[in-house]
Figure 1 (cartoon, rainbow, N blue to C red):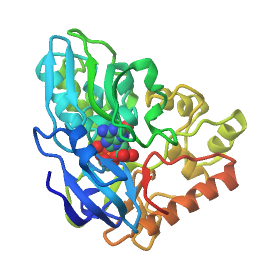
Figure 2 (cartoon, rainbow, N blue to C red; figure 1 turned 180 degrees about the vertical axis):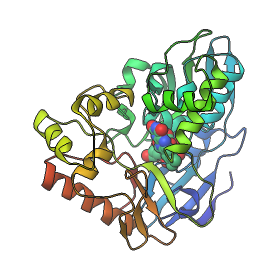
Figure 3 (tube, protein in one colour; figure 1 turned 120 degrees about the horizontal axis):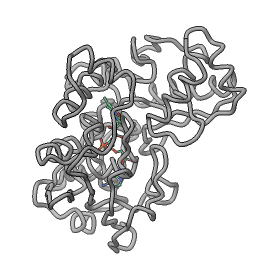
Length: 347
Ligand SMILES: Cc1cc2nc3c(=O)[nH]c(=O)nc-3n(C[C@H](O)[C@H](O)[C@H](O)COP(=O)(O)OP(=O)(O)OC[C@H]3O[C@@H](n4cnc5c(N)ncnc54)[C@H](O)[C@@H]3O)c2cc1C
């Protein structure tokens, strides 16, 4: 195991902000994550592809393990993957093997481990829908156990692995069960509209993947590999659960331009299971606008929920904007907005 020192974490996160890892180990193909965790100086931070984190400018003590390598195996209708495998490679492999169930999550960036911890979702499909079980390492005592689906407590963009106090629990590998025939319909309006425009029927796996690519591209949801920015971590906030009065307040705001039915329906499709509404509409209703800029931090010019680093923003700059948004949304709409992006280190 090769330990590097004072490694920039800004270079390893999609927001390109934050400090140094005191010790840094990159997992390579064939490495055993469990053994590396055991040998590493504590505390250990397991990072995937860095597409959903904001790392403190003060950096991280102990050891950061960059877990971006792993195997994916297809066994009949089942797929087994190491937590460091790339999520979209797994989706592609499922499609190559004519297995249905993951195709709507095509092109979500990141690794298998974080996909489970955060129960990623898109276009009506959440990871929990195909998940069977995972091997979980308790980094505190070194024990490994197999967790079935019900033990993981999946919820909207969440699992028990993300609960406070569970930072020591990490996914080593996971199993998914898929179907040799279509499982779900494509029900998301914007994707259906794209399908019509590009002349593709959502009735084959490859067509679905193409439709999702085009829909995500139009939504600014394809991770751009750019050396100069702007950079993002995707949607920064979760869709909040709100009461009827708060829904009315959002609808009343002219920029949101939606009906109550539209507002609530959108969220069900995004994997919500309560009266959640689009966080983008919440931001607009609270008075924020697309393209709004604070120095080097900006709300995406088309997709207000994506907070961008224009090139030189520090993690503190981004954090301050996040706090301003949370405070203003609470003040104006009495809604508690929760970040989807995970904060690592001291803020
Ligand atoms: C352009 C863009 C589009 C996106 N679109 C979507 C979308 O459509 N739907 C969606 O749900 N998300 C979306 N995201 C968010 C992101 O893709 C997911 O959150 C993804 O799962 C992050 O994976 P990662 O490997 O980069 O995680 P990281 O950012 O490296 O880590 C995220 C968190 O997971 C933890 N973690 C990492 N590995 C493990 C492990 N093995 N075990 C336990 N915990 C672990 C980390 O400690 C951290 O707390 C998008 C992000 C971007 C940048």
